[in-house]
Amino acid sequence: MAGTEFYGAEERKEINDVLETGIFFRYNHDQQRNNIWKAKEFEAEVAKLVGAKYAHAVSSGSTAVSCALAAAGIGAGDEVIVPPFTYIASVEAVIFAGALPVFAEIDETLCLSATGIKNAITPKTKAVLLVHMCGQMAQMDEIMQVVKEHNLVLVEDAGQAMAASYKGISTGLFGKTGCYSFDFFKIATAGEGGVMVTNDEVAYKLADNFADHGHDHIGSNRGMENHPIVGFNYRISELHAAIGLVQTRRVPMIKEKNNMHKKFMMQELGKISGVTFASIPDENGDSATFLNMLLPDTNAAQKVVDAFNANGVGGFNYWFTNMYHFINQWNHIKEGKVAAKTNVQLLGAPQDYKNLDLPKTQETIGRLISFGIRASWTEQELKELVAKMTASINQAMSQTA
Ligand SMILES: *Cc1c(COP(=O)(O)O)cnc(C)c1O
Image (cartoon, rainbow, N blue to C red; front, side, top):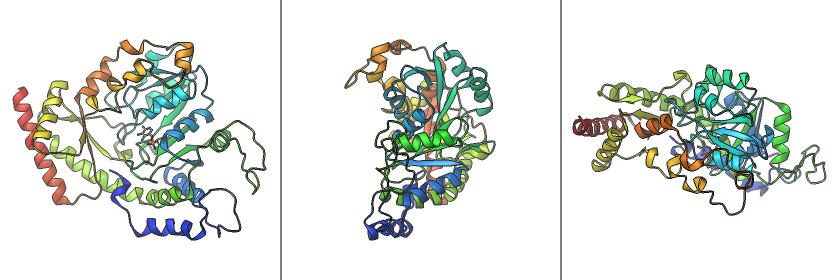
């Protein structure tokens, strides 16, 4: 599951480098910093891992989404197609960009589908914020076709799918801009942190300026340079970058172990009648942070959840009734509850958020139970978990039959 499973001497060494110099700021102080530049190294490591031309590290995955949207030119009044199943940060970032979220259908990939996107397009649609969910990836061939056909800007939130790929291209690099989260629950953590990636030089420079009050960072005296655009403070600190750097190096190992564990679970649990899995458009590109199990219907899934709880099987998410990840729980968005007016209130919501018709999404998330996969499981632990899961599922399914 998370990089937090692995923490040790390497992290402490990188943090110590920063503690030795006392330079926690990522810019300037060239004399005192003794050539320690953790944010820059962190960016280079992420760029290498995913094959991006440019990477810019920021304070969180959420601010990385904001940078990705800004750098892609998404702003006031733009309609942006978003999924109703995502970590809420994606939707918040669209709202605080001054743009208007338009919810579209997902499918068994757990991501927006090409059909879902197509059906949500209006003359005002500017962009798609595609979220690669649960460690997997969207069906990119079909989505790119719709994006190109309708001349839409694609921005990818790969907050929970760093190191996932589709046909050899990393999530985050299909669109104009993309981003990853390094919060405490992701495949690699920086404590708090995020990285925006792109292959587009102009977009990269915009993100770099946007994330630091518009400073262009040309030359070695930040603060005295030019300010091509208005920005804000989304900077990462050197301490966080130091942790993110080591954690990023661990990702290939974690991904390999995750995949081994996920394959075993799918093979064993797939033998149970009624159990299927979320579809993975490119199995070779799975980051495998989650096992995504589909039951025949919502009722069956709820029975299985009850059985897991009764039998002490932990470590899973039933998103259908989870607080953060599913639209059924986003009453604040539906009712327009805000601290201060946003463009959704000013311009009017592009859809009736209280009465959204998303049957495919409701049906899919109702059936979905996701298990966080741990790379650090022993064979014994994994086998015991699968045995307990199997017993619980069989027990629940016999009740629904
Ligand atoms: C975690 C996550 C975010 C937000 O990242 P933070 O680092 O927690 O701010 C955004 N989008 C997705 C899809 C996520 O999973």
